[in-house]
Image 1: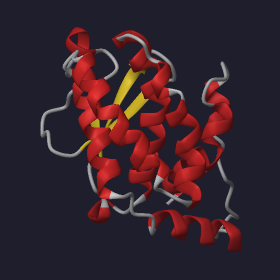
Image 2 (image 1 turned 60 degrees about the vertical axis):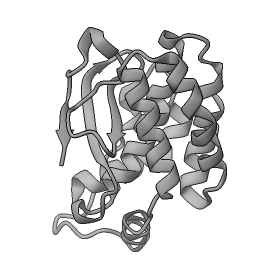
Image 3 (image 1 turned 30 degrees about the vertical axis):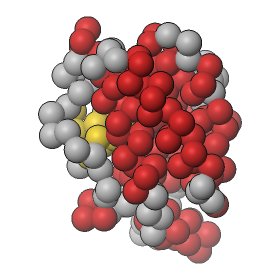
Image 4 (image 1 turned 45 degrees about the vertical axis):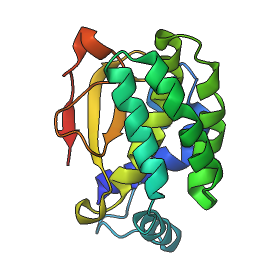
Length: 181
């Protein structure tokens, strides 16, 4: 439960800290009382995020973009980018508020290296939404790289691939990471 609460706080605070140098400040721990009881507002926020279902077009397009980066295929990534951006614009609420500012930076990646750097914070935010769901409701697998270039710990989702394919390094470190359950 505490892990989910930390994820919730990361999702809600993520846009403000995405490009700051103080990455550790993103991870704010919510203290519960000695019996482990959440406040009423924390309880409501926890269940609201668990109820979020990302649009399937968004999940698929982001997964496809991540796989393109993992395969070092910048042209394919650029082909998937319009679907990613369109899917984000069709969201609402907490999903839109979190993802829209991050998605606007995706178009600034003019080569595969810069595309990976702009994709990482966006991908982390998407993965955090997926992780906030109970395991049985998750729409994709979530993977984590322990040494991603921008945030230090990068997360991404994969919908159709069963083998971990790291989008942050491509062939250089294709299978670096682990699945988060």
